Amino acid sequence: MIKTNEVKLQIAMLAYNFNNWFRHLCLTESLKLSHMETIRTHLVKIAAKLVHSGRYWTWKLCSSCVYKEAFKQTLETIGRIPRLE
Image (cartoon, rainbow, N blue to C red; front, side, top):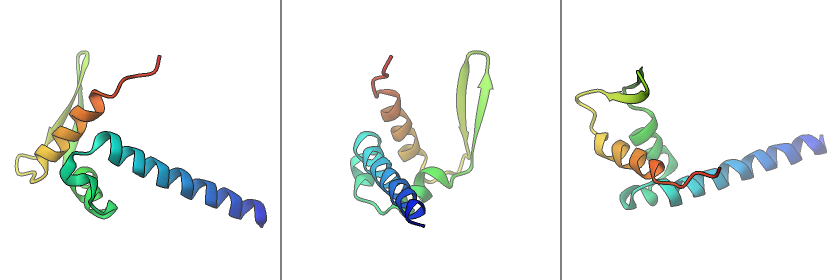
């Protein structure tokens, strides 16, 4: 039972840290202070499709997507994060 609680605590800490890093590194100033549910609504719960064409992957968003700019800015910010090689 004790090991189970330790694992649950570690997973919760990992999720909390990932949330903080994602906010700090990837989100625009307008979304950084938002609740996690708001971030999910703006960036995750959208009608989008990831399409592979040739050498490129492209996001196809719904034409009436209200949060298109926030999604685009977040993806651009993620693309600018230096990669570890």
